[in-house]
Image (cartoon, rainbow, N blue to C red; front, side, top):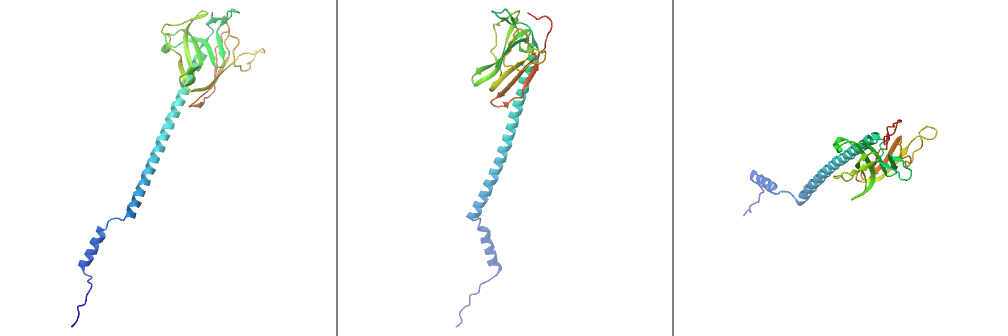
Length: 228
């Protein structure tokens, strides 16, 4: 008696069954981990690029803000010093000299017309000095109305206005005529309080902005009679 021979069929039914099993198999763990790793790397690269772009924009804005503030402060000081007038705001008790300009390394005082947008206008004593602020040293300016040989404190006087709130260092220097009639050397103090210097320079640096461009201002000179 013959035994039945098992014949492996290679028909369409078996092929379709293998095809279905291949489609139902899904992804392996290695494939999932690889895809997750690639996705994480892509997200990290995207976030890094976004942070770099944001930091660049922030640095640009801070630099533009510092530059604009430098220009505003230097322009203000230049206009104020350039409009200085020989009006006396004090009298020395020992010599009787009219005090028209006082210059120290960290402070300068002089009289100039106050712009209307800062007050009522007219001659005011400008007191630019290094003061102690809440966050450290600062360069500030205060205004007081000037009269002949003195000043008048206003009832609604405002506190000093900060010009450089994050001041690191400031140095005023002064220059006048020498004995030979030529421009003299720069000095840290102006001793001739009854006259104006020819030039005033300011070197300053801030904690956030670094070293500022040096400022040199020529003051107006009135060779006629001095204003009391």
